Image 1 (cartoon, helix red, strand yellow):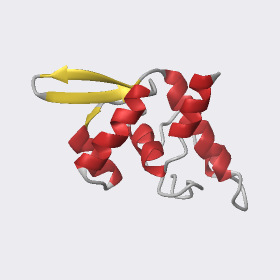
Image 2 (cartoon, helix red, strand yellow):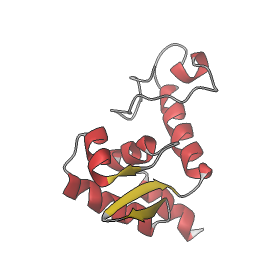
Image 3 (cartoon, one colour):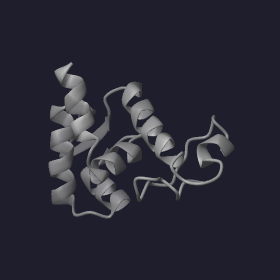
Image 4 (cartoon, one colour):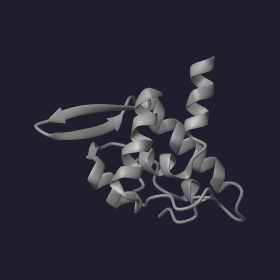
Length: 118
């Protein structure tokens, strides 16, 4: 139970949500992730350390480069479901009900309502 609480605590930060979203179906370095979310690499690295300690991301070293990926498919589903749920707060039909369910959404969330999804 306490690990589940820790997971939700980690999801209570918009930068960490953006990092996890960026890692769905791919593996990226700190610098690549920093570019994806528009933050400094040092800040991204601190968030990734917390995500790693909470077992939400996994690392792989290649030479001097460290790559991050989601620990498992449940993390991707949790983030996607949270953003899809936020879509319901807006008026009209949420984007995720209009989008092809088999296509990964490539746009990064920029707000808690995820209104910028394709």
